[in-house]
Length: 203
Image (cartoon, rainbow, N blue to C red):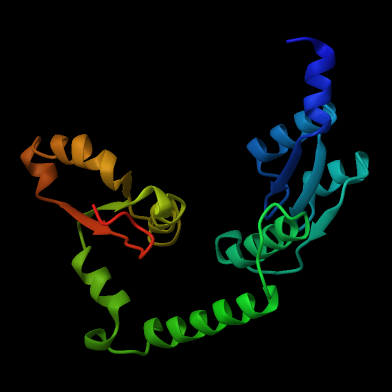
């Protein structure tokens, strides 16, 4: 491929860096390389190197003003990304404010249902925690839910300090689940957590 063609493609490429701290090494490295190659840039962070690179390349930067830990700021990273893609007509979200209100309401309902004071017999989160006590969680879901499956895996590691495995449903049927027959001691400690969506293929 010629240098001229590579440059032309770079100029047509949009790279959005989303990093809560603005200093995630992999994100910063990719963002810096994109800037060096002339791609269009947009940054989302609380500051850090991503913010500095946006200033360097005169690119838009969405500044997050939130004081919690990164793993508690998922909404602050996702909403700006959806908003940017919507404004650029890459995706179409009708009545964006209504969508945010709907998600906020759903989160409030979930918080009321899963919060610590709710007794175990009425709290699915506590019931799941008890079922997974001293077990190895194997989180599976469809391709549609893959990002959610990975998020659950990360949450187990970061929040509960528990090792967990993630896999896609169709893949796991032919690989991971086949390999669960040995060693027996390991298979006896595995609990499968399946995430489902009405968008999943019925198969």
